[in-house]
Image (cartoon, rainbow, N blue to C red; front, top):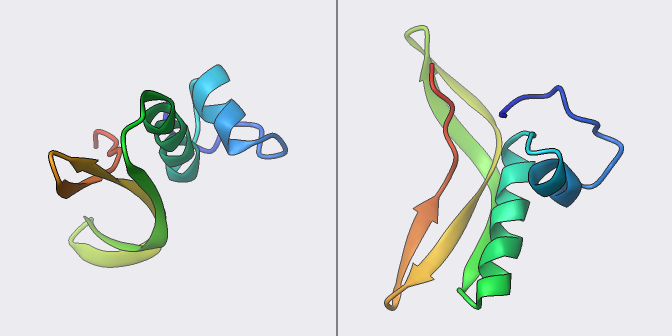
Length: 82
């Protein structure tokens, strides 16, 4: 479940894997740990993203992953349905 209804006093990994809930940082860290466990090269990335909501361009803190597959890097991010 995506959202802020998680316990922000516990680790991001706990939110993402055990509680199955969280925000982008929780999901990105959980995904990174899963890829690391599988031996797949993965980077955790933090930065600023832009989104188009209600016909307005907004900027927000965001976290996502980059994964190396067959020698090429791909962005991987979780998006919520709107």
